[in-house]
Length: 324
Image (cartoon, rainbow, N blue to C red; front, side, top):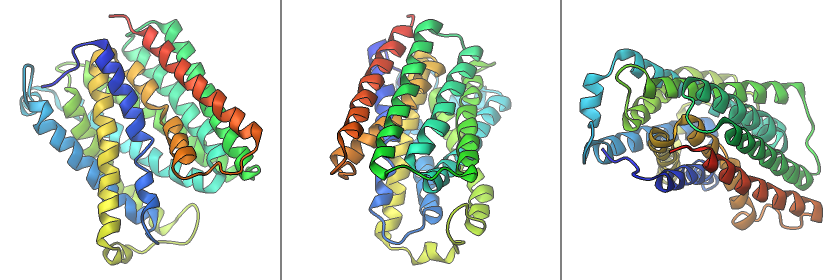
């Protein structure tokens, strides 16, 4: 199987994982009158397909244990850990989308992603203490600061969001769950005969897929915002909408596979910390492509500048945390 040979390669992969994770949602912007709850079925299929292709290509070629050999040799517990991680992630992802819709980016980002970054890194490092804890802590603080600056910038753009208890609660739960999947991935990659990153990606995505049959129908019937969604709309959607959903899942899948592959080299805590800086990439799309900040005031642009400075500093600090 392919594995990065140097720290520089692994670092680039973690940065690209953030790029993919911060970019997949753009595909939804291309759909027309396609409820997100229905789009999500196409999206999750794309995630599963991407992980399987990685497993039978890069994960099954070259030196090292192939995907199928690893699947046969590992214990069932590691597979379960990876699937639980995917199950938890899927609920967190659905709640994050709902939390953004209810409270806006200015509230959702610092609460949900902020909690997720701190919790995920701390728990992963406790299970796999790989890297310098001091530099890693500085990197996490800088990444959290970048998320806050990002939120402040969007807050200026929107003229301030109305904070509701529901919005805060949804985003807190999303953040706790989003940070909670990383320790399960860490266990799957470190205990007994560990899963390879490619095996983790496959079973993680399968766990997320299985979760959809529980969480998504419930949210379709009882949406946190808006009217209930009927599954009949899935069959009425255009081929373009379905393809965009699949492509969105493939984009996320590339990010997930890159992150897990890099984690096999640098450790989950470092890989997760950089990958979860994806809101910065989403902000770049908003600024450069979707022109969301057209007409924004000077303070909003100031916050954006501080966000990118903090994000770059976070990547540098987390990179320094690695001890080869």
